[in-house]
Image (cartoon, rainbow, N blue to C red; front, side, top):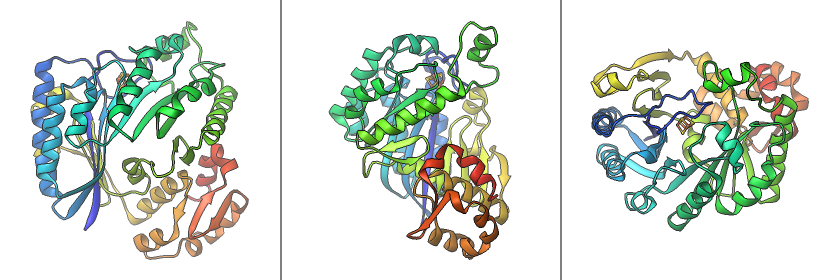
Amino acid sequence: MDRVGLYIHIPFCERKCLYCDFYSGKYSDEVKEKYVEELIAEIKSVGERAKNKKLKTVYIGGGTPSSLPPELIEKIAFAVYENFDNDIREFTIEVNPNSNADFGKYKEIGINRVSVGVQTLDDALLRKIGRLHNSAEALRCLDDANKYFDNVSADLMIGLTENQDVKKDLSVISDRVKHLSAYMLKVEDGTPLQKLILNKFVSVATENAIIKQYEEVAETCKEKGFIRYEVSNFTRSGYESKHNSSYWNMTDYYGVGAAAHSYVDGARYYNSADIDAYINGLHSGNGSQIIERVYSVAEDKEEYVMLALRTCSGLNLDDYRKRYDEDFIVAYATKLDKIKNYIDISNGYVRIKEKYILVQNSVIAELI
Ligand code: SF4
């Protein structure tokens, strides 16, 4: 039976962070309740369509899932259990430090992994990017999460300013987590942060500083016993995110909720980014999903190669052969020859050498 993942989008936030272009906003309790009713309807319908698949991972992301009352999170979790043939190995919820997460309840309903949006422990930087929490709240949240969960992850951001002290943050956080995601700040079009930068009210790190900060993160994580398994993701042994890994190896996943994306049976589709439409039933549960792309085999192959080579373990030759009924080394022989100095081929995998991880996009571009 094919395995599948489920992503559940909770598009509610108390206030928009200045850099954020995710689909989220502040809504009333009434809207939140209606939204969850529709989520449950969509979960039922997706469960029907997934009858021949076994659900292995669930990820409640946002937005701020922990801004929902715990009883609503419970309803969502039970809808998943009731409507999917499941053998759930990993069930994650994202929380923000200031959002009254109820870890006891989350554990009781079967969630087994928590991802905390720490971003930085520098209070001035947290204010600069418009986060609602401070560093003391972030640490308290991590400590509270650790009372209930073995598998706690933290999100960090780098590139917030020229001299961001990522080593200092990691020295405080690393004992409190099993997994770390370190993302580079992207200044997205149309965000308040972009306007502030264009008007020269604030500045962020230069490219060289970002590279330095990334290298410091990688180095400190290594010293602290973390393994890098994807360009932005570091883990203690055995705590790799199973859900995110399924995005990288193109395992099918359903996304439910406004703006959620799915990849199933070689096609990508999504719900419209419109909460009002969603609570009026416009979603995949009623056949209203938008088809983004139906992949040809050649396109599917390109995407698979690109995603697999972004991971540190690399492209699994056996998996490739099973998926496409051809030998990767033979099919890509000429192209592989051009990038031979940048890659390792061993133990059934093709991977980009660690020292070239920051130029991996250019290496991958030679292949696809
Ligand atoms: S908490 Fe996350 S989703 Fe919400 S506004 Fe901030 S960055 Fe965006």
